[in-house]
Length: 71
Image (cartoon, rainbow, N blue to C red):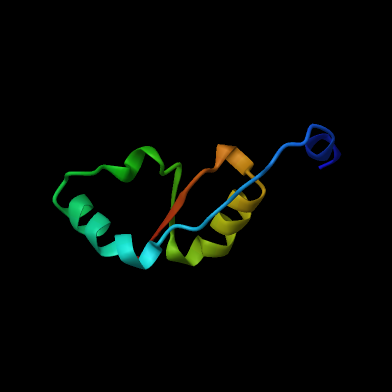
């Protein structure tokens, strides 16, 4: 953090309007217009949700995105 302050850098962030875009994006995925699979690094069963979260949180096994599947 000190390096940021010493260089007078500005950090900005924001949030996505998830509820606004969720339905149109899901529809485009279902139609095959968008393929989000390039983001998915791990697929786990729903019963392994805690393990998947820990893997993501600690960046184990180069984890970027975990998808949980019901049995």
